[in-house]
Length: 253
Length: 268
Ligand SMILES: Nc1ncnc2c1ncn2[C@@H]1O[C@H](COP(=O)(O)OP(=O)(O)O)[C@@H](O)[C@H]1O
Ligand SMILES: [Mg+2]
Image (cartoon, rainbow over all chains, first blue to last red; front, side, top):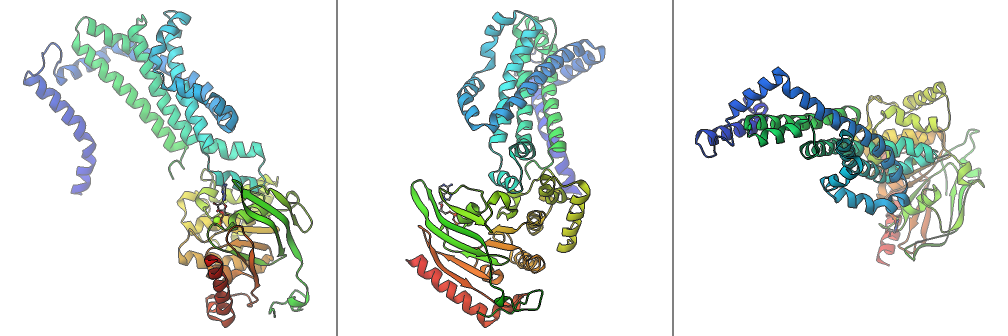
């Protein structure tokens, strides 16, 4: 009883410690109060803006852009990745390109996308989708390419033709890696959407809200918005983990 | 060699001459320029259990995989009763059962998979699977996913899956090596049961001499690379064989003879 209770409380230790240190720093005056409000003030401000609904518009705007970018990236990345992964020659011929752009910080391409799309919502979505699609494509292709050789042979011995093997083995084998790609892809999309909202003229979105608050030194709003952005990213990640556990029940087994 | 088995008509099997099932002629296979098999010939009799035994890396798996069509031959001809592999139904049991089963479908659907690939209808598939379940006297829940089963249960599912289409030949590559001793005895027994019921030709690769001899009608002993046949010993002990068979003099003598040849080959 006793050890299990301690065990269950363990995950809360980190966050509590975080707020205690934050509070301590503020109370001891280690940081200028103008730059760092107390955690209670921040959380109170956050609750207030959520209830009054002013922040909800920004949360929704960011979420919508991220979701659209992600949906586009998944719709292109998964089928293309699986197709590339099933042909060694096809993948090898574009491998360098994928690796190169995957290693290029997508934020470096923002000016380029500005030239193409101008200061529009489509621009923010396009660049986030571009960043996400590479991650998703790479993971799906990797999942197919690293399918267990034994399973492919087993299917072949049982009379499966190339299409059967693709559908019954390669595709299924790639699913758990595809989910890794989707999870990383949506995180990537969120990162880029936030950056784009900060620096590509925007009227809504959490990125816009954070930088706006910073400019007028409304630090409570800034910290509250940062916390909400973090929560959004965290929840998206958790949602995908839950879906993965549900649909890819064999993952890691 | 005397044979205690009798056929359906009550005639001793030794009077009905063994028919050859699989013929391997002029087989050539090399890896990275160094030959593994050169001008290799082999006959595998029909309705018998053949064990392949030899030093590690001598090419037991490669030989079986070439016969089963899992890897291509460089040169040579392999025929099944005069037919090609494409015209022959085979079953294959892998050593790595975990990597051979499909974890995304239930054990029972794994068993049904080859039947579906053959284009059988739902009722026929179900009938055949039910028949296998009865034959194997399965006591665990086949509606579970493979990763929920023990190693021995998973290998049992693999064997059922391989036997589902009623293959003419069943290939098994070290089917026991990932199992504990208790499971090995159980599966060995099951294989003998199935063999006595169906008379399917079996080719078993084993690195355990006891397993190799226990199941075999003939034991194929291979040399080190480049691989040749060191001996192709018959072993006619009556079936069903049981754990007591392992202390019979013919068992002990056969095992000792095989070991002697094996040691000579490893030293050579
Ligand atoms: N794909 C391959 N490429 C290169 N060498 C291989 C390959 N497959 C097998 N070999 C070599 O062929 C020999 C026989 O392998 P294998 O048939 O697996 O041996 P065994 O099953 O008797 O232990 C080994 O020396 C192995 O290194
Ligand atoms: Mg082997």
